[in-house]
Length: 354
Image (cartoon, rainbow, N blue to C red):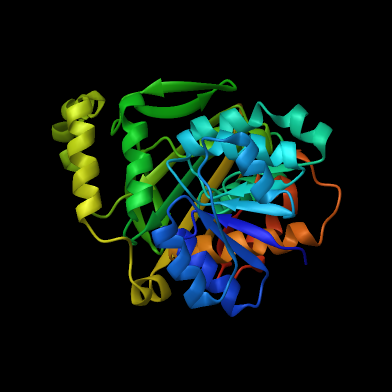
């Protein structure tokens, strides 16, 4: 297997991935813009490293040209994904990342023709965003081939990392996103809600601007898609009280204050939490004109950050063994929906058909 580069290796998730690569004996090169953070980690793991930022396209290309792929872990991806992806296309190097941001998926999808011309695969969302949800969506589409609508929901008790919270914070001023008649529509946060049976209980959650609003449309061609998150810490009855204040997220001062609060918090869930918590994903596809035509599936899998560590590395390995992939792809498009079931501690716990 040729070497691959992990950019943003000193971040919370990037470091988890770097440590797994070392443990598995994989030829990883660590990279990032801060030598004071990258060098100590690389020396500890006895892995090669490179230092560069994303402001100089020629420097990025020269730093990755000998790699078969880059796994991009440095967010917020809305700022960092496109420069790295374009450098990968110029260098003939495959691109993967762990984003969940809809604008990033849209930007990289727009590069599909250019990536195909260069024989480069663009695979954003190779972590918990959006591997389990994308694969679940493809499963139910395969079972309900004439589906017009798709609902996705997920439930996890896990804590978010600083990077995830900052990415979510940047998206909040744009409100919620849903797919209707093939187009992405905006709406208020904490308004659309749904109750789904997950992990053996009925759980009510709210529609959120999760990546699958865009990516599942590409994977399945289903025109109407909504994604829901079952958030344990947000009682449903509080939503009407909180909703009027979501507009404050557009304030630069509020964004700055919240970023500082995030930086003051913990980096992410500890090892015990990552190894003990479980996540659950639900997908339901149906044809609104024929109620008898539907399919549902529920997956049980790992805590989100452990999942991302496992799935991103598995995607690199799968890509190294599969030739001919190029252009923009979702995880299920690249590797098929059984990919998610090849990951540790992941299984179908419920499947329903008419």
